[in-house]
Image 1: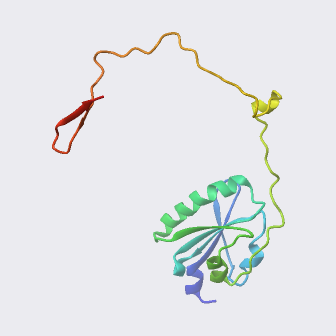
Image 2: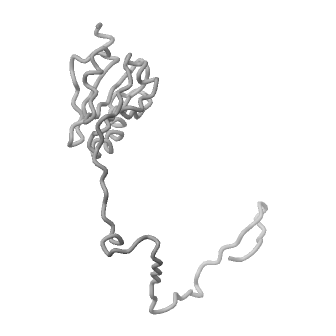
Length: 163
């Protein structure tokens, strides 16, 4: 692979703390071996003006969340107008597969579904139970006589009505 090709092809691994780390000695032919389910990679193809964010199906939520901001910062560092393309494992766009001569990687491993117990579930109620919560006000709101009056006007500036 020529030096010019390496400059057009950069691969960064996204670390847990949100930092990117340049992976060296990766070619488009060896890229497939770096794509695994717990990985988030940011792959730059300058010649295509693309920054791909490849997200493995079991990649930590934090990495997935911050990957787009890291890609935006990288685009600014490169001072190129690259389009950022998000790629999920098992749902890779044909553009991504063709750019590197890859085959789609079926998602076989997933994050455990995160289920947050809501207060309503803790109390044993269901969503079908009617609950009406109305705020109580001590006093009714007062409207000052000094409140501004707004007028609707026609294009010629003549008053239509008061509000």
